Amino acid sequence: MKQYPSIQIASNIPVSDKAHELSLKAPGLAKSADPGQFIHIRLSTGSDHPLLRRPFSINDIRGDRVSVLYEVKGSGTELLSKMTPRDTLDIIGPLGKGFDIDPGKRHHLLVAGGMGIAPMGFLGRRLKSLKLKHELLYGCRSSSELIPPDIKMCRLSSDDGSCGKKGLVTSLLPGRLEDCQDPVVYACGPWPMLKAVARICRDKKTPCQVSLESFMACGVGACQGCVVRDSDGGYLSVCDKGPVFDSRRIDWDQDCVI
Image 1: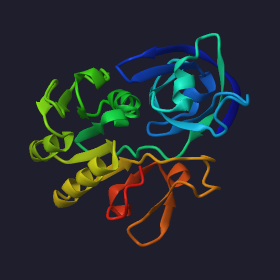
Image 2 (image 1 turned 180 degrees about the vertical axis):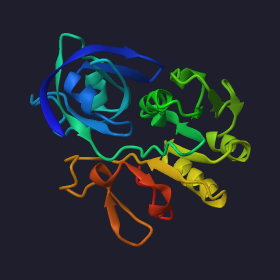
Image 3 (image 1 turned 90 degrees about the vertical axis):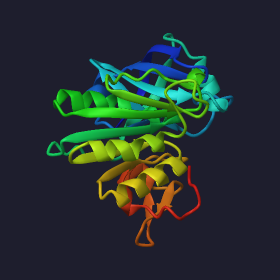
Image 4 (image 1 turned 120 degrees about the vertical axis):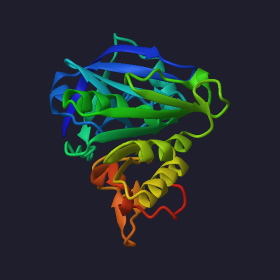
């Protein structure tokens, strides 16, 4: 982890009706990050800007460019969407525990719901570089919210049927687990989706890693503002013990934390 007080924006463009891709000139970050990790962004110290940093999963790394995906849904992301390559950002990262890739597995299934697509581009690129067989199952509400994935083998679903199969992305998973030999699952998305994926993988006796989303203040486990209950009755801070966890470690009966 390192603080970069003045990272130059390379581009900041819309990729769907609600989402943007932010690309940063960050060679230091690019060299040290792993799939599943995140960065903590502060827009400004000005009084008109949000006080706390915002966490964003690393979406991809190409050369010295680090990109993140974000949905415009509050004052912080609204301000971020208006920033241009003339602007700089104060960034801490890379943070958290990323995905644990097992090269011994024969088939790697990535499952993303909505903005859960964010860490999958980087993960897919890493799997490709390792020459590991992988595919993406990606669900969104409608084609207007589809963020074009950069993974060749992809199966789509949408709530309204405007792209891919009509229904939830979790409906695609059981069949793929049946067809794939020795699979492992990596998932990111809303809590109900992750809960369903964890249950399906438990029943199929398939290892599963989930990337949790949570409100974060410090990003390093000090404030305990992002804790979730684990399956043993204890608590885990999403920012430093995760955001990626073995799905068996999470108590899925707790109230939604995302």
